Length: 105
Image (cartoon, rainbow, N blue to C red):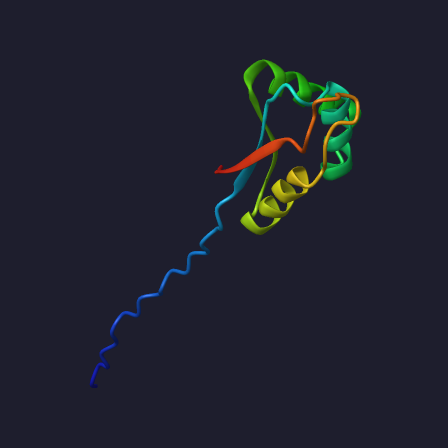
């Protein structure tokens, strides 16, 4: 009886490559009030008043705070919404929106 030869098959391992996450980092300045920051974070990100207040404290004390983490396209949109939010009417010298940058997570 003749034995058949079989060659072992190797399975190609499929790995799903995850897309990198990006942080939207809000930067501190002296041209916007706590109320402005809280209102903006609630409007743009849907953060609760308490979470927005904590972020306002952090940006004020640390100079920066991560306000969102997600995929690049969405993070860019959120950053752009911050840049388009406008001046703080509560502060006479406020001339425009706050600044935010993107960083890889």
